[in-house]
Length: 137
Image (cartoon, rainbow, N blue to C red; front, side, top):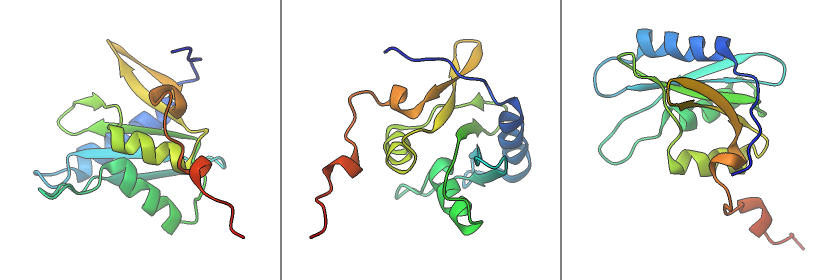
C-alpha cells in the first residue's frame, strides 16, 4: 500500500467522541461517527444495532448528512462507546464510502496513534460501482 498521510482532524475526533459519550447507551447504539463537509460543517450520527445487521454509524451518517443538505464529505471518523477510541470502518462501510465519496479521507487507528488515509487506501484493488454502470441510452 502506497498511502500518503493527511492531516488528522482532531476536532472531528472530539465531535464523534462527544456523541459516543452522550448518545451511545446500551446495546442499540455503540458507535458514533462524525464527518466534515467541504464547507466545514460537521455531521454526526450513531449506529443502529440490530441482530439482523442494522446500519453502522458511518452509513447512518450518510443519510443524516443528506437530510441536512450535505452531499459531499471531506473526512470521516468513527469512535466506539465506553472509551474504545477511533475504530476503522468495516468492509461494508469501506465499500459504501468509496462508492459515495471516492476522495474521502478516513481517520483510522494505528497502534498508539491515529492517522488519516484516503478511502481508496483502505480498500485497494476494490470494485468501483460507478465504473461498472452502463451509460444510459
